[in-house]
Each structure stands twice: as structure tokens, then as C-alpha cells.
Image (cartoon, rainbow, N blue to C red; front, top):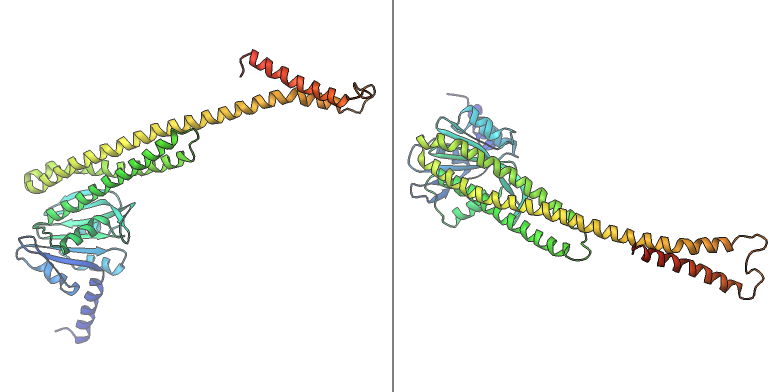
Amino acid sequence: MPPIGKTIETTSDMADYASGIVWAYRFAADGSAVPIPNASVDAALAEHGGGWVWVHLALADKRCRGWIAQHPPLSELAREVLGGPDKHVRLDILGHEIVGVVPDLHQELTHESEDLVRLRFVMTERMLITARQQPVHSVEINRRAIESGKRFPTAVSFLDAVIDQFADAIGRMAERLGNELDSVEDNVMQDEPADEQRRIGRVRLQAVRVHRQLAQLKSMFARIEPRLAAHNPRVAEAIGALAQKLEAIDHEVGSLYERARLLLDEASAKVSALTNKRLFTLSILTACLLPPTLVTGFFGMNTKDMPFQNTEGGTWFAMMVAFTAGAVTFWALRRLRAL
């Protein structure tokens, strides 16, 4: 029997590791769920009865990484993926385990943001462990659905709902980006668009970021679906359905990117046209004012025998000469069709 002090130390360490668990649920065969206390998570994962267990972890808590390294029944590679620093999108089959890193949106206090984060997971027939560095939108939405009574009979159905929520969030983001482009387009059609290039650039940047993530997800699903079809047709079917939905959303995001690119070209052309028009007006004014300036400069010289110097009303005569010089210049420009 180990010393009492050693036993107490081990129990304390387990509770310390368990503090990195955000929440855990046990799902029955019918999909209904009940919360699991952190202290009972290890026992729930060790059970071999019906149903399955979901554990969600916060990687920002270093104690959580200690729990990953020692407690869940996972392979070493699965532990590395779950708690590692890799941020690349991936999906691999490791024996009876499916491990992956998928994108999601950062969950703010009351709504999702447009910042992309990573959700890591390891899934088996009886277990799903998810981990994140920052709160993720899709997991939070599905947790609320569980609290409202929604049922997930399998771990695959829950993971399918998570990725489906991500696709829906991207769809809503695409709608917001489309509305932004509609507003920009209305302003571009006006005579003087103001700061529209910056707004279009922001839309293009967000669209290309989302497109990269969707393209990686589609490629990943297309690669792994044939491998799953022989061993787990239900998972393969879910992945195929998600791939089709992501394809439709990616097409919409791609259309937004192309529309933003064309709108940016139109806005740039409109700004260039306005700039050229103003420069042309400035050039005409300069051309018309140059001869009168030359005349006034001539009469301003303090030299002998200056015209109209001793003539009554000489100032008015000099002013008339300057005005005539400007009028002649304007007439010449009109004659040459420069105006």
C-alpha cells in the first residue's frame, strides 16, 4: 500500500488536471445528455457501457495539458494533436481514432466574431475530446443546444453539428460581406466615393481568409472520405454532406471576392477620373492666369519709360491689358478644343 501522503498527492494532482476541463457530458444511446463533474470524467471515459462521452478542454490552462498527457485513453499521436501547437487544418485516421484540427470562429461574449481560430478533436466510437485555445462559436452553440434538450446519439452526429454550425456562421458572414459590398457599390455610383477602397480591401481580405479555410476543409474531406467509406460508412456519409455544403458556401465566398475585386477596379477608376478632372481644371486655371500674371509682372518693374506711368487712368488701362491677355488665352484654348 502506498503511503498516505503519496495517495493524497496523486488525488490532488488529478483534481488539478481536471480543472482544465471546461465541461463534460455523458450521452445515452438515445442521444440525451447529462453533465459530468470534473472529478468523474476519468471514470466516465473508462466505462465500457452504451452511449458516449464528450469532454471539452481549454488549452490556455496549462493544467489541461497535463490531463491530456496522462488521463484520457488516447494514442501518443492523438495526444500530440490534441495538445500540440500545430495550427494547420488536418484530419487523420489513427486506427480506431479520428483526429483533426478544424477552423472555427472566435466566440465573443454574446456573438461570434470574424476571427478564425482552431478547434482540435479526437473521436472514437465512445468518446469525443475537443480542445481550443480560445472560445469557439460552433461548440458553444451546440452546448446550448444540448442544454435545451437536443440529442446527439453518436459522437459523429455531434461533430457533424459542430462543423455544420461553422458552415452556417460562414454563410452569415458572407451575407454581411455582401451587404457591405452593396453599400460600397451604392457609394461608388455617386459622384465622389469616399474611402470606399479601404472598405473593399477589408471585405477582400476577410473573403480570401475564409476561402483558404474552406478550400483546406474541402480538400481534407475529399481525401479522407474514400478511406472512411469502407470502415465507417456513416461517418463518410456525414463528411460527404458537409463537403457539399462547404462547396456551396465557398462558391458564394469566391463570388464575393471576385465582386470585390471588380468593384475595387471600378472605385479606383472613378477616383482616378475625379482626380484627372480636378487636375484638368487646375491646369486650365493656371493657363488662364499665367498671361495676366506676366502682364502684372511687367507693369510692376521699376524701370524708366513704363507705359501708362504718367497717363490718367493708367492703372485701369494696365488692368484691361491683363484681363484681355487672360481672355485671349481662354479663347485660344477653346479654339484648340482644350476645353
